[in-house]
Image (cartoon, rainbow, N blue to C red):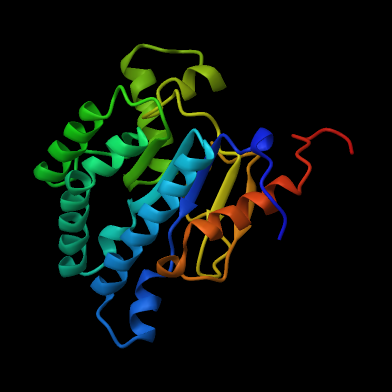
Length: 233
């Protein structure tokens, strides 16, 4: 399979964690079981990213389109997110993980919003991996909200730098590698601006089956590519 070159790690990895529902259905379980198992995979992959020295990981946790799911599933997901954020505090502390959030907070349940802010504040000084949790996030929504902020600030001339400065977390760099699991090959409104020159990696494996070894495989594949950013070969 090859080995990872620590000098050529991607700085920012975005992950579309797909396949929780299918994983559960294949086992005649409720979709909620797949979401619970998916959290275990998220923890394993984040732990491995921290060990490797990756600087940023953005996890696509709940999209602006996921509100179309059943009310029961949406309620379960937010409860799971709420409990997980606080429960894993020792894990963040052990790996020096900083947690931030991207997405529109206006429609989030108040308790989830409070927990996101609390975990963000409690981990703000941790110097290791930054985990960017995308909840109620859609790339188009973020761009529109950024434009609205520019208008509110009286900005008349807009360039890439000024628009980017109004993103939720402008300090997070563009994605170097975007991973999607479960065999789907699309971005689904995820990091559209930030992945302009990202390498894309698609895995047939369902997200609840992912481990740290799968992250290694994706990074090795990434390191086997040549990034030219529009330049000549």
